[in-house]
Length: 141
Image 1 (cartoon, rainbow, N blue to C red):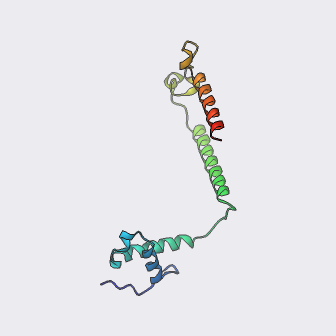
Image 2 (cartoon, rainbow, N blue to C red):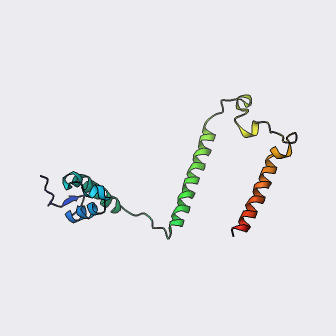
Image 3 (cartoon, rainbow, N blue to C red):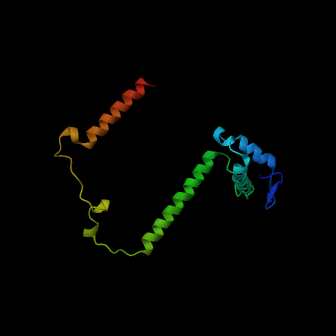
Protein backbone atom coordinates (compact mmCIF):
# COMPACT_ATOMS: atom_id res chain seq x y z
CA UNK A 1 0.00 0.00 0.00
CA UNK A 2 1.24 3.45 -0.93
CA UNK A 3 1.77 5.90 1.89
CA UNK A 4 1.73 9.56 1.08
CA UNK A 5 2.13 11.23 4.45
CA UNK A 6 5.36 13.00 3.49
CA UNK A 7 5.45 16.35 1.77
CA UNK A 8 7.44 16.75 -1.43
CA UNK A 9 9.96 19.58 -1.86
CA UNK A 10 11.41 20.37 -5.30
CA UNK A 11 13.68 23.40 -5.82
CA UNK A 12 12.38 24.96 -2.63
CA UNK A 13 8.74 24.52 -3.68
CA UNK A 14 6.76 22.23 -1.41
CA UNK A 15 3.76 20.13 -2.36
CA UNK A 16 1.69 19.24 0.68
CA UNK A 17 -0.55 16.23 1.16
CA UNK A 18 -3.48 18.63 1.49
CA UNK A 19 -2.64 20.05 -1.96
CA UNK A 20 -2.83 16.57 -3.47
CA UNK A 21 -6.15 15.81 -1.78
CA UNK A 22 -7.57 19.16 -2.84
CA UNK A 23 -6.54 18.50 -6.43
CA UNK A 24 -8.14 15.04 -6.23
CA UNK A 25 -11.42 16.65 -5.12
CA UNK A 26 -11.29 19.00 -8.12
CA UNK A 27 -11.13 16.09 -10.59
CA UNK A 28 -14.21 14.87 -12.47
CA UNK A 29 -16.30 12.29 -10.53
CA UNK A 30 -15.06 9.26 -12.49
CA UNK A 31 -11.46 10.11 -11.53
CA UNK A 32 -12.29 10.95 -7.91
CA UNK A 33 -13.46 7.36 -7.42
CA UNK A 34 -10.10 5.95 -8.51
CA UNK A 35 -7.81 4.76 -5.69
CA UNK A 36 -5.39 7.40 -4.42
CA UNK A 37 -2.52 4.98 -5.02
CA UNK A 38 -3.15 5.32 -8.76
CA UNK A 39 -3.70 9.06 -8.78
CA UNK A 40 -1.03 10.17 -6.29
CA UNK A 41 2.07 10.10 -8.56
CA UNK A 42 0.26 11.91 -11.37
CA UNK A 43 -1.23 14.54 -9.06
CA UNK A 44 2.11 15.20 -7.36
CA UNK A 45 3.86 15.60 -10.70
CA UNK A 46 1.18 17.98 -11.96
CA UNK A 47 1.30 20.03 -8.76
CA UNK A 48 5.09 20.27 -8.98
CA UNK A 49 4.89 21.42 -12.59
CA UNK A 50 2.20 23.97 -11.76
CA UNK A 51 4.00 25.37 -8.72
CA UNK A 52 7.36 25.57 -10.50
CA UNK A 53 5.77 27.32 -13.46
CA UNK A 54 4.06 29.90 -11.25
CA UNK A 55 7.21 30.69 -9.28
CA UNK A 56 9.12 31.68 -12.43
CA UNK A 57 10.36 35.22 -12.92
CA UNK A 58 7.79 37.68 -14.26
CA UNK A 59 9.42 39.98 -16.79
CA UNK A 60 6.49 42.33 -17.30
CA UNK A 61 2.91 42.70 -16.09
CA UNK A 62 0.51 44.07 -18.66
CA UNK A 63 -2.32 46.34 -17.49
CA UNK A 64 -4.94 44.25 -19.32
CA UNK A 65 -5.33 41.12 -21.39
CA UNK A 66 -6.01 43.29 -24.43
CA UNK A 67 -2.64 45.02 -23.97
CA UNK A 68 -0.95 41.62 -23.73
CA UNK A 69 -2.65 40.50 -26.95
CA UNK A 70 -1.73 43.73 -28.73
CA UNK A 71 1.94 43.62 -27.80
CA UNK A 72 2.19 39.90 -28.54
CA UNK A 73 0.70 40.46 -32.01
CA UNK A 74 3.01 43.42 -32.61
CA UNK A 75 6.13 41.44 -31.68
CA UNK A 76 4.98 38.46 -33.78
CA UNK A 77 4.28 40.66 -36.80
CA UNK A 78 7.61 42.45 -36.46
CA UNK A 79 9.51 39.17 -36.16
CA UNK A 80 7.74 37.75 -39.21
CA UNK A 81 8.36 40.92 -41.22
CA UNK A 82 12.06 41.02 -40.35
CA UNK A 83 12.47 37.29 -41.11
CA UNK A 84 10.69 37.66 -44.46
CA UNK A 85 12.83 40.68 -45.36
CA UNK A 86 16.09 38.96 -44.41
CA UNK A 87 15.21 35.74 -46.24
CA UNK A 88 14.20 37.69 -49.34
CA UNK A 89 17.40 39.73 -49.33
CA UNK A 90 19.76 36.86 -48.56
CA UNK A 91 18.46 34.30 -51.06
CA UNK A 92 18.98 34.65 -54.76
CA UNK A 93 16.29 34.19 -57.33
CA UNK A 94 16.48 30.86 -59.14
CA UNK A 95 13.22 30.91 -61.12
CA UNK A 96 12.43 32.88 -64.26
CA UNK A 97 9.29 34.94 -64.76
CA UNK A 98 7.86 32.24 -67.02
CA UNK A 99 8.27 29.59 -64.30
CA UNK A 100 6.54 31.86 -61.76
CA UNK A 101 3.60 32.78 -64.00
CA UNK A 102 0.40 31.49 -62.42
CA UNK A 103 2.03 31.31 -58.95
CA UNK A 104 2.88 34.97 -58.37
CA UNK A 105 0.02 37.48 -58.40
CA UNK A 106 1.89 40.22 -60.25
CA UNK A 107 2.88 37.82 -63.07
CA UNK A 108 -0.54 36.18 -63.47
CA UNK A 109 -2.77 37.56 -66.23
CA UNK A 110 -5.90 39.27 -64.92
CA UNK A 111 -9.27 37.76 -65.67
CA UNK A 112 -11.74 40.11 -67.29
CA UNK A 113 -15.37 39.78 -66.28
CA UNK A 114 -16.72 41.97 -69.10
CA UNK A 115 -17.72 38.95 -71.15
CA UNK A 116 -19.46 37.23 -68.20
CA UNK A 117 -23.22 37.54 -67.60
CA UNK A 118 -24.08 40.09 -64.89
CA UNK A 119 -25.16 37.42 -62.37
CA UNK A 120 -21.75 35.68 -62.52
CA UNK A 121 -19.68 38.81 -61.87
CA UNK A 122 -18.03 39.26 -58.45
CA UNK A 123 -19.21 42.86 -58.19
CA UNK A 124 -22.85 41.79 -58.50
CA UNK A 125 -22.37 39.19 -55.76
CA UNK A 126 -20.63 41.72 -53.50
CA UNK A 127 -23.40 44.31 -53.93
CA UNK A 128 -26.05 41.65 -53.26
CA UNK A 129 -24.31 40.54 -50.06
CA UNK A 130 -23.97 44.17 -48.92
CA UNK A 131 -27.67 44.86 -49.52
CA UNK A 132 -28.81 41.66 -47.73
CA UNK A 133 -26.44 42.34 -44.80
CA UNK A 134 -27.73 45.92 -44.46
CA UNK A 135 -31.36 44.77 -44.50
CA UNK A 136 -30.69 42.05 -41.90
CA UNK A 137 -28.84 44.52 -39.68
CA UNK A 138 -31.79 46.91 -39.79
CA UNK A 139 -34.30 44.13 -39.08
CA UNK A 140 -32.38 42.56 -36.18
CA UNK A 141 -30.96 45.74 -34.66
